[in-house]
Image 1 (cartoon, rainbow, N blue to C red):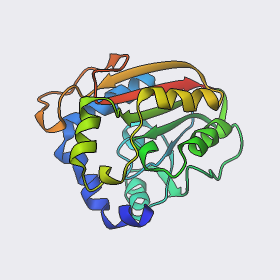
Image 2: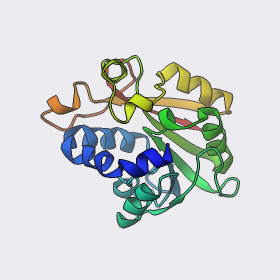
Image 3: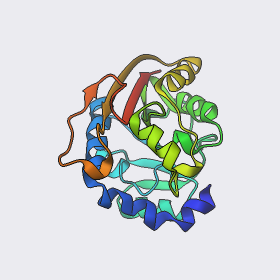
Image 4: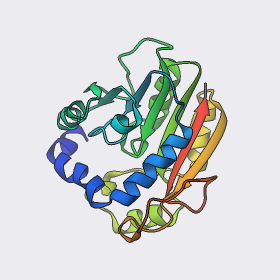
Amino acid sequence: MSTFFDEHYKKYDAWYDENKLAYLSELEAVKKALPEKGHGLEIGVGSGRFAAPLGVTAGIDPSKKMVELAVKRGVDARLGSGERLAFEDSFFDHVLIIVTLCFVRSAEKVISESARVLKKGGKVIIGIIDKESFLGKFYQQKGSIFYGRARFFNVKEVVELLETAGFSDLSYYQTVFDYPDRLNAVEEPRQGFGKGGFVVISAMK
């Protein structure tokens, strides 16, 4: 997968400019769950499109080209795998996993590693394209150069993974209530899930 993203990193990064309103709507939803203070890590930092504007200083990604873009955006990004984080136990105040879980080899290991590197009382914040939403169904049927390789999750599946890893106190925000190319404004996130294509799930260690 890292080789694939190295080959297509420009196309991946361009999506955020081509679908700016959807991207900014997703950012707003993540902000709702993100603590105002603390040292954070983004697993699957990609080109830094979330970590940089959200003030998440550290990031890891298996794609060299993606890491280079994230560094240019001011993120302390390095090559790495979410299944084996090169950080000490209880090191971070929060961990972000934004549209990454569907591309990893083992979602279970990524979430258990997130729990390991989080301080007690720290938060994990996961953003997904909900498999059961209109958008998730569209991507599964239509496919894309990226989502054709994805394993989509629904909210219930992510909750089960979090609870198995010992997380609790879950909350949900949703956004992107129409197809990204049809939006005409940045959308206000709503609590819950079931209508938005993009869902943010947060939980506490």
